[in-house]
Amino acid sequence: IRRSSVVQPESVGQVLARRLPDPLERLSRPFFKTSLGQVMASEWLDARLGRKPSRYMLLLVAAAVLGGFAGVRIGGPVLAIALAIVAPILPWQWVARRAEAGRRAFGEQLPHTLDVLASGLSAGLSFQQAVEYTAAETTAPVSVALTKLARWMALGHSTEESLRHLLDTVPEASLAMAIEGIELKRQVGGDLLSM
Image 1 (spheres, rainbow, N blue to C red):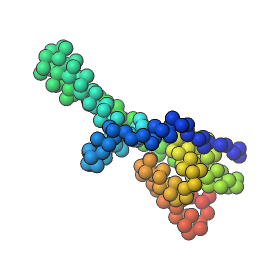
Image 2 (spheres, one colour):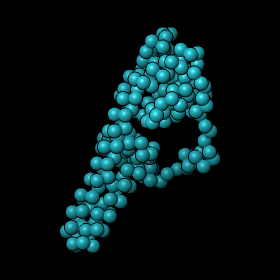
Image 3 (cartoon, helix red, strand yellow):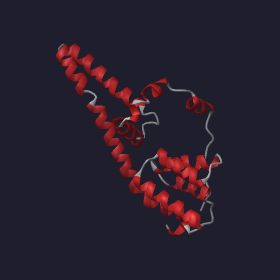
């Protein structure tokens, strides 16, 4: 098994972009605490369109504005109102379908991912090295999630903390069950290869 160095340091631009406050995120925070907002945020994250769900609201507002503008140009205020209401349905459906496809792909890849992780561990790699190896041997969306996990562990966080951070980033039910199994085996001293 070849050892791969998946973890790449973040560029200065990435660090600055991550640390600068985002006014749109701050303004939309109360909405995303509601049940509808949480569903929308979850769909946006599952669709892998970025980590800022406020962009979803921006997309829907932009669609409504464009629909209203087109309605005014074509047929007047009544058509403008109708198109402003109907136009956001298109991006909403697109994000929902993309999120569903992402969740399905993640769930389908997870058994193979766990097999690759187990083979890395059986070859004598540490857990972090096995995660890096698995990230290199799998495809998106799993490889993206594992790269984040490897980076988090490389920054000095414990395995349990890193796994919990991954679950916060990728709230997938099948991943939650796999992480619970890994954590349980690590706590009781079980063999991770027998997962």
